[in-house]
Amino acid sequence: MGGREQGAGEGNRARIRDLRQAGKKVDGRDQPLELEGDEPDVLLGSDTAPNAVETVLHALTSCLAVGFVYNAAARGIDVESLEFRLDGDLDVRPFLGISQDPRPGYEGIRVSYRVKSNAPRKQIEELCNYVQATSPVMDIIRNPVPVEVVLED
Amino acid sequence: MGGREQGAGEGNRARIRDLRQAGKKVDGRDQPLELEGDEPDVLLGSDTAPNAVETVLHALTSCLAVGFVYNAAARGIDVESLEFRLDGDLDVRPFLGISQDPRPGYEGIRVSYRVKSNAPRKQIEELCNYVQATSPVMDIIRNPVPVEVVLED
Image (cartoon, rainbow over all chains, first blue to last red; front, side, top):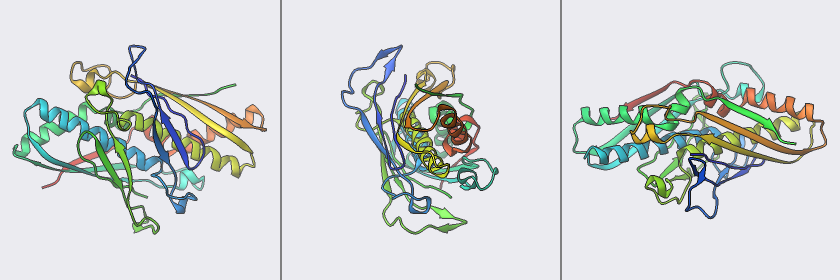
């Protein structure tokens, strides 16, 4: 599976296009999906859209939510409602070039979640552990991913 | 700085709320920003919005784009246009519980970018190296971030 997108500049827009399976384009997406990015006023943007690090938290929530409801269904666990709350701590000084530490990205992320379900707490926590272990975005955030960057001619 | 959001279920919606600086809420965002998440047909969704791992690519593009134009301006480099293309390779079997390897997340991400600028190629590449080194999302993806998950009562 692959995802592609293009963006340009602050107040940027991404077009998310092909899904490929085993090198073959998956049918069903004739038009690219779009996502917007911006920055809050305090970072010289217009705050018309979430910024990049907020979008990472959304991606993690989205991934955990999908994994949770799919795997709850597979285990016969009834989920009436599911809500995640995420907080991430980030020091903007490295991004702004003011300091080299701490790291530019999140120093830590806290996820708390609330579930309405008849299942016992232990079963919900076991489900959530499984979801964390198999979540693509959790893996991307918790573990290193190699990224190659090339300037085209 | 922190970001928060809530989401629920497949076809999920995130509300992105407070930005806090030094523990104090930053003014300027009275209403939360919203982002949508879904899954393509092939993963049992309705493809109304990008899925979580596509959103990660958008976050990385958004981060690199903002860093690029800010730092280009700071260096007096004129950027007429900037376009990123991202591809990520991901095997869905771990997420689907069919196999324990490879990893659930991206095995690798390739970024290629195209710039219209009068600056020489060497200067563009130096700028891009600096942007990568200071990019919060690049750091989050390339390096491990601790994530704590707690079930609320």
